[in-house]
Image 1 (cartoon, helix red, strand yellow):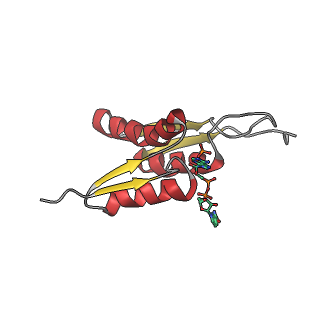
Image 2 (tube, helix red, strand yellow):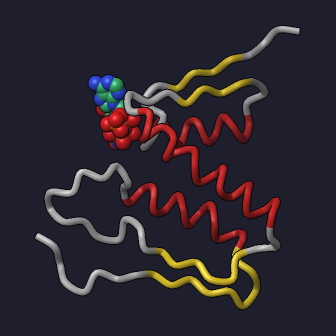
Image 3 (spheres, protein in one colour):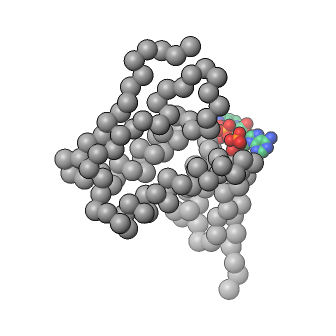
Length: 112
Ligand SMILES: NC(=O)c1ccc[n+]([C@@H]2O[C@H](COP(=O)([O-])OP(=O)(O)OC[C@H]3O[C@@H](n4cnc5c(N)ncnc54)[C@H](OP(=O)(O)O)[C@@H]3O)[C@@H](O)[C@H]2O)c1
């Protein structure tokens, strides 16, 4: 049997991440997500690992508090981006139970 391998550079966000996700869903082989920053690469993968853990361990989510990546100060260097916020929502929303709640922490004034 011939092993099939796909490698995506810059796979931690943006188009690269979307391609990794698409390949993981459809590609009949091993997919490597590569990133120049290990922490950013791991962060991109960790939400799916967390989802798998929740699915295996619990019956769903009753309350999801969206607190991360809602607003940044102008000099923030965090790698977490709006795209990742949307990714977290897309990943975890299917696990929210009927009558479950989503709490979005809001920025009360624009940050410069
Ligand atoms: N989005 C568009 O509309 C569009 C249109 C035409 C062409 N493109 C091209 O398509 C590619 C992906 O676009 P995108 O919007 O998904 O970009 P992106 O969200 O900025 O993601 C770029 C990815 O490449 C990595 N990267 C950037 N410079 C690097 C370097 N010097 N060495 C190693 N890794 C590097 C980034 O790593 P870090 O996270 O560590 O920075 C990130 O993982 C880019 O090359 C862009 O120029 C995009």
